[in-house]
Image (cartoon, helix red, strand yellow):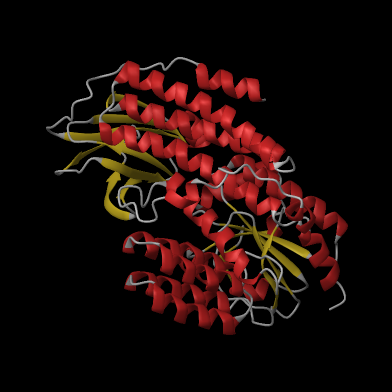
Length: 466
């Protein structure tokens, strides 16, 4: 695997280069979306929406920027990906939603920089999988692995610089990409390593293993929405936070104690207000999606209002908290409106007549909906005491019904949401794999389980005799 990665790192870059000088003039971003999921793309900068751009009949799009600043932007079409833009660029993206990141390729003015960033992104995804096999190695062995990867990264970056002479701003972004991805690997290793007290007691870390922590920039405005930087900070603050309570309670990054401490750590160390607010929002949202404790949910909202200065975050997270509190065990499942295969409207509570597992799927991912139905078939055969009801989250009724028929699914156990936005908000549908377990009276037993997680079988067994 290592040799394969090093081979990837050493391959030549297959795109032309332009001058390192800053460009000027009209600036465009356009391209083609193959197998589109919606009728538009969204362009963002630092988390704020710049514009929504409609796809033409041939699934192409084009957008002209008005006085853009050089830097990292984001485009969204069901999934997200970042791109680098500077004035005078005429950047064209081509992406297939069936294989979003792997298919994404750029052409036009500005393509060289963005194809290089995508190369780094895909390399890092492969490296994360590789490095996970070394989490049980010693700190010295792990550091040696990262050093070998870092050496190849530097060679590859030098080759790109010599061939393409990027401007200083882009070079700084590329360097930060490599740097913060390496730091993230160390933070993940640390999180795994320190769970074992015996390993910690016998640890022999290289002296410079954590040297980066002394100099890391905790308020970089240019990188505040750049994923490698943002991800590193989130991992780093998790490790700082564990030390606040690990002697009293088990580590749990989804717990109230962890997130309340972490938000305070973020507030005390991050020097950029926008970055601070974004990190606090991320962690508060993650907690609220996982919590089953209404009281702690209310406490988290108070913490958010104290430490996050963005009032839009307050509104968003308070709305989320209200929804999650209504999904705690013992509450009635929200009575959203469904449509059945006979095109009849049914209220959710009316279709529940026995212990039931609700699961959700979309035609946007053929692989996913086939996998989830296969998993449900397996669970249904093991636990016939439960009804398994599939709820489709798309808006095209005829396409959904045809998919149900062609796939051979039981039409009596398949429904579609009548009002998708309203139902997604009330049921807090934040994951394609989310499932709810409901008793015969329509009361929630478990509101946030994963249909593919092995824990779901333990939960079903526990609820059998209730």
